[in-house]
Amino acid sequence: MTIARYFKYRTLADLEGDSRRRALDIRFSADLSPLFRPVAVGPLRAGNALCIQPMEGCDGDLDGRPGALTFRRYRRFGDGGAKLIWFEAAAVVEEGRANPRQLLVDESTASHWQRLLDDCRQAHRHACGDDDDLVVGLQLTHSGRYSHRQPLPADRSDLVSDDYLRSLVDRYVAAARIAHRCGFQFVDVKQCHGYLLSELLAARTRLGPYGGSLENRTRLARDIFRAIRAAIPELVLASRLNVYDGVPFRKKAGSNDGEPCPRSIPLVNYWGTSAVDPLQPDLAEPIAWIDEMRRLDVALINISMGNPYVSPHIIRPFEYPPPDGYETPEHPLAGVARHFRLAGELQQRFPDLPMVGSGYSYLQEFLFQAGAANVHDGRISFVGVGRAALPQPDFARQLQETGRLDRKRICRSFSYCTALMRSKHNDLGQFATGCPPFDKEIYGPIWDEARSRRLD
Image (cartoon, rainbow, N blue to C red; front, side, top):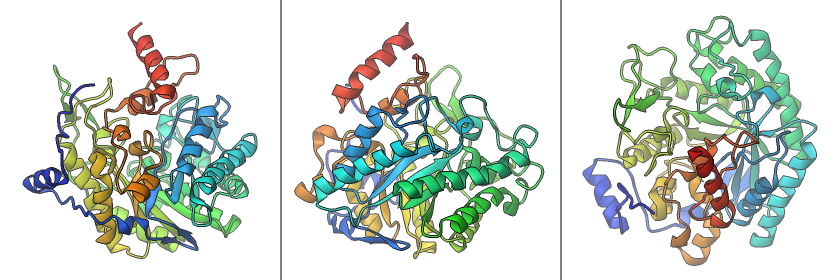
């Protein structure tokens, strides 16, 4: 395995010292007890402050049902001890699926969702004794311009009509009804990473009732929240929200180094981004929208940023890019600090609205010392764990039982999982994604097949 180029920290002191030298506000605490305090989410109560982030496994059946590897992942997540499990993005309509193996929520898949959730909870009860303080929700999505059958760019009213957008409200409600019937306690109306509702947030040049003003750009999400609340009053509302889009990046000519794609200033169709400096966030509109979502009875916000297709270093700071990606244009710690800073500003502005923070996995074995400090300092309510949960889904139990992670299964942010997610050159049109280096028995052969087919 190739030696890491950025992450050379042997001790927490090494990492703290480098963060200080770079003038980055990344805090750490050896006291992990804040991670194991209960957290209220509306009427619900999570037994600890650890969250499994929504991560697509791209391992469903072609008809949108969970596949064998989907069941394996969620049994492992349930067994792991985290008390907030955020099930991955599931499309509310067939044409809104991001890949041929993305999960779909409709009546044809409902019984499979029921079994998937039951398996997850049963695994949690077996490992933890009971699941009374386990909070589980489902992320609902429409992939918009990233829909695999036909791109549906939400910023274009000539390509995605007002009537079509309006019709989606009922589809979100139908999916929420199924989620509630299956036993999910909350649904996430996904507004991040460039998908349909996220793109609408920035659609300043779209004509009609869904573009232009902030009121118009948030109209569809607002109508969805209201409709779900009216139809299923007991279902908790949540959203994973981009608070900073940034701009697309590309490889520099003649190298793999990443650079921003050329853009005219002032920027127009970007959310949470300074109009005059695309590398700087502007939280004015995200703050206004979060404030309104709170009034719409949204009880949980998951803070994210960037776009996995065009700015992966923003959403998930990495050690190595995927094979088709660019080298990070900044030290990954700068990306971690950006996540912590923006999430911290928002959590402290809305202290009674629990938020999930992202960007932790790059910190490897020191992830939870950073999370504990952020929870203790009121900079976040939940520590969200994404990539790091793939090789070590039992991280919460590891911390409780031993006070540390299993070093042989720590995510090193080598981007194998991202590379698999981007690999679509097989008969199903999509390879399942996981952790080939540290979950070798299952994903090693999948990686070998994806790599050999890419070389053919």
